[in-house]
Length: 340
Ligand SMILES: Cc1cc2nc3c(=O)[nH]c(=O)nc-3n(C[C@H](O)[C@H](O)[C@H](O)COP(=O)(O)O)c2cc1C
Image (cartoon, rainbow, N blue to C red; front, side, top):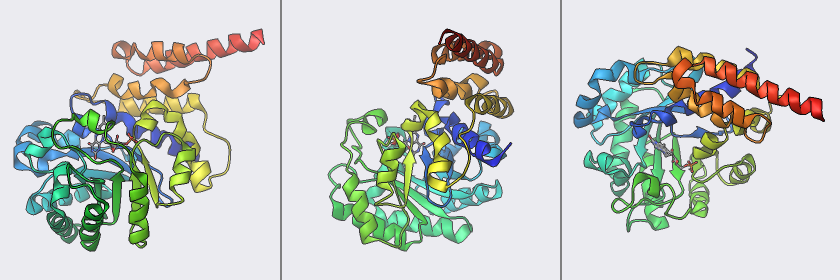
């Protein structure tokens, strides 16, 4: 497969974890448009904390796995124990992950009960110790994903102090979801929508730490918006924007990485994604969970509705639904051409 097309497929495959449904913490974080190298995020591993480790043990091998086509891929860890996190980071390195990311952004009560996620923003020195512990254990970049603040601790000075600690400990990138999180009273979903976006504070962080690699996240849905953010920060992470419009990513390589040539072909991308789904499906992640991400692939194109209807049958015939969907799109497009 030509590299350009392969890259587009990679962009799409990373969205598969969004739909693991009952395991929201294990889902894909989003998508980065780094100027240098894109990195997808693998499933958050909660077994860095003993309580969660027990829960994950039965499926452990599976949850750490990823397909080679997903490189470069980061392993996201959630935890507050430096020894356990260092050991989890070592396991991630042994499994071939390209980066270890620490979750300091999730506000769910489950995560808080393990003292990790967004509530760690209240303990910058401890997060710095966690970063140091992981850095001492593995050679991979250790990165941190955080919020702009939590609860009443949401002044720019608090964010600045947090960044200073974590960057001094050697975090290779700070990815900032540009909203604060409320640790009580809002669901994780509300915490992704209700607190207002405060992009200028992330820009200011980059001005204050010019040597640091600062990534912005939250509410970014178009490549024009991404380009504007890149005037202020080093990287952009897109989550739901890609979920709703995966084809957005097909244009990334040309626009941001200077790749020449035409856009990939939607039909070929869909087929490659179907192959990928067949390859990585497992008893806990069925092909239809993965294929759901393809639904909006033809948005705005003739035949989009027919494609979605065919995909809705993927629970019956797996990846064959994609082929049927593509046939349906072709039929609609041919009909439209013969009329015009
Ligand atoms: C279904 C879903 C699952 C998520 N899971 C994680 C996660 O495991 N770890 C994490 O750091 N962020 C997670 N996030 C948050 C996203 O990474 C991102 O910060 C947030 O959606 C805001 O970006 P967006 O507006 O581009 O979607 C999740 C988001 C969604 C919608």
